[in-house]
Amino acid sequence: MQINAYLQYNGQCEAAFNFYEQCLGGKIVFKLTYGESPMAEQTPADWRGKIMHARLAVKDQVVMGSDSPPGRFEAPKGFTMSIGIGDPAEAERIFAALAEKGQVGMPLQETFWALRFGMLVDQFGIPWMINCEKAG
Image 1 (cartoon, rainbow, N blue to C red):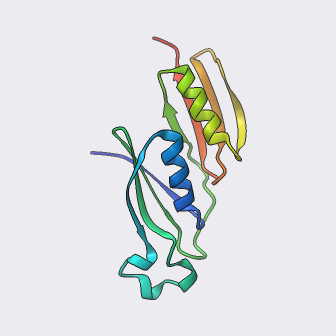
Image 2: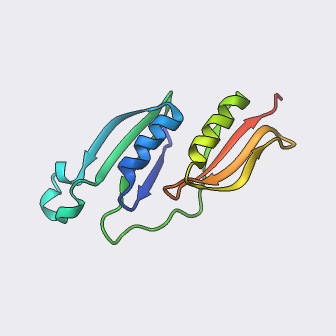
């Protein structure tokens, strides 16, 4: 069994996944637009270049996403993407990259459980936690 996050966007999926590919050192391994799908004729012309499905591989992890059909997008709520990182310097790099043009909720800092922990919402509206735990 594999459980993956599936992120929904309001027309910014391609930009978001390109951004995550750079920030997280991943690789977009699949991307399909509405216009390339069997649903092309049922899709408004201005939405055919939007992403119907994308898949980003980051080491042995996968994040998937798409642009919600027109009029069906809902802002993310009730979840946070969580990244566990063993190296404080890498935690700082990823946090700074994801925070670019976003909103920091809790600056990356040492806590009683972590060498580095911080929370933010990225420029695409996706909430993130970065956690670099202290050794057991």
